[in-house]
Image: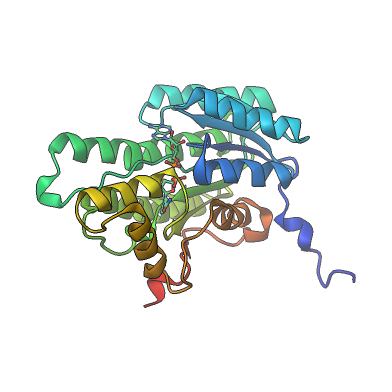
Length: 276
Ligand code: NAD
């Protein structure tokens, strides 16, 4: 069947686009890296886990895609500058940045130390601030890439509603929600052709989610990992948590030209969790 309009299924592809993805050595970030590569993008994998990050890039290349790895601790502005320069140098451009790297400290608010609070903010909001800032500087007219682009910030359902035990995490993720909207408005008003959106996953089957279940057991919210799994599955109206690919496909849409009129939006991908 022929397409009904000039925009067609090919708009969902990422051919020719260069993407830098933080925290992409495993979990949701790694799924974004593979999905993007399959959709035709050149992918810069980045993480503090260098061996695992290298392995993800190697696997993409072995499968016929185009990827490289650069170390990036998102809490360091200097490393951000280096990672963006390395991406532009390696793939001759920068069209997409996914701010995915994150940690989760589960503690009741009154037992959260200032150091824990700061660590949580450093990775989950300072890291996104640096990422958005330096992505815009590279993508804007006159920047090192200079051809506009799409920035996708991975927030959480915890960036839209409160979660007992996750005060520091939810505070950082809530900040990501409004940083995204404000930066999107600044770019739209400036006419820079840079779109910025946030994605809000519910529970997703990753190492971070496994560690959350371990904390649930430690805090007495579940008797075992198996019980914590049942509880987290039941929390989602569709009856189970998501897989990293469920998030990666939404991120691909936001990275692609199929979402060319979408900016400042908050995409919830949560098996119905927030519908209640
Ligand atoms: P994960 O722990 O599997 O992966 C996170 C990655 O981030 C790891 O590779 C880790 O090394 C990296 N990372 C941590 N600190 C870093 C730093 N300072 N600099 C660079 N990289 C760093 O977790 P995930 O579930 O894949 O999480 C990805 C994102 O999705 C996070 O922002 C998380 O908050 C968010 N999220 C996850 C869930 C879930 O249930 N898994 C739900 C909502 C939101």
